[in-house]
Length: 92
Image (tube, rainbow, N blue to C red; front, side, top):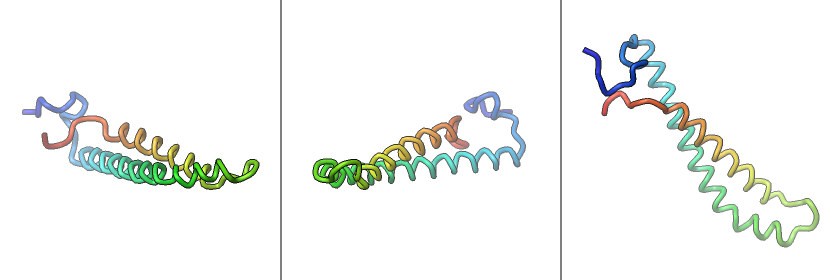
């Protein structure tokens, strides 16, 4: 008897398909963790980026660019990781 808590497309999977699904969800969790770490780094970099944007002349603002890059990568990793982890976990 299939588990009625699982979505319809996940009820009749072969063991290989279940392994692939678990691997996909693990990669999604890994991307979410990486995105969280990058988000923390981007928040900490705001101190140096603020000084960089205030005191450096012209377009030379490396810490500001690193902060923007870390924030963008953080949002991207969290979004992609959440999309990979869609569905119900194996054990509820």
